[in-house]
Image 1: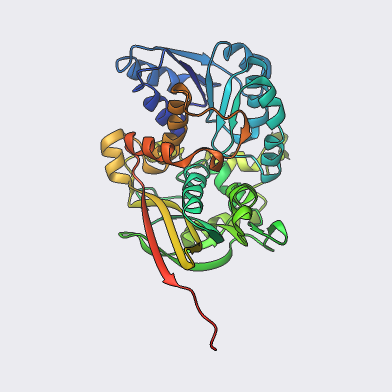
Image 2: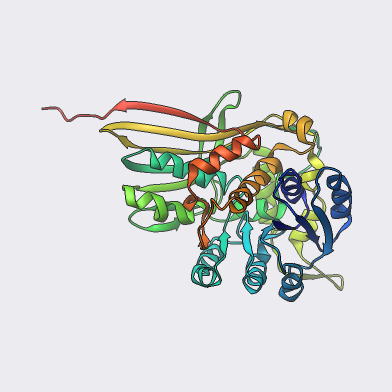
Length: 401
């Protein structure tokens, strides 16, 4: 099987390292507009696989360049900026190559990507939209929980991290562009009555949520996220789900800094003239931040992502929290990566495993929850990404006679 990863940052490196372990791999293409990291990674991985590892300069803004690179490639992971998703999808459509990404540019654009379903089906290829950890594992965890229930009341995706970072400044454990953009957006939620809707302002509905030990209680906020766009309609509504949300743990320093960035207009991606030079304010902020892969070994604590689902089973109230938890220090010691990028890079590798084995036969453009969860979760553990379930059962309240 021939596989390509476009964007060789932290997550792209994790994915490539996982692909190098696969016996079915014949060729791995590392594509990026800057090839320094890709060249170093290729030299490292070539000693670990019999497959050919190629490095190619690829500009994700050029459909022509990507289509030329993707000829005879079976699957592409787009691990670059989500702003280029549709262009990469177009290149994959031209070459009839299966496509995977891990995040959307905007929730509006995610809906546009989903609308390519017919075109991808006609081409006989699969596009998986948002298959990282969250979105991605979180969607599949929600599907697993929903499948165990007779009825569903609510789905809450919960992302918590209690880490301390050896860095004196503003940073993000994943793409800074995405972190700033999604945290300043009005948070989305879904109800059976309204469909997708938004809260009035960013950093909404602060509340303490309890995560598995050793994380414990942390402050979480509603944040705009991909899962909310699809989960209610695909797997929630058929079982009576009334509400879907995404909750994200954010520490006070991060919240205050992102608010300041928003107040100053430094989150804008529109160019402005500064003393005769055209610059993008958000690019300046991001340039002053460390890249997520540069934080490897400097993060100490735990990262936990999962789906909390409430409903009923056999006329009893039932709650599931299906989650994955990782220790940053342990992951770094074992893999050389920090836990957040590692957790994001493993799920797309599992999807390629299932494609290679002919066990992922869907065509068209789908969100991750439409993947059969049990085979996926089984393979996830085989690749070293453990997950677990907290399950609670209680009698339903009865009316007084």
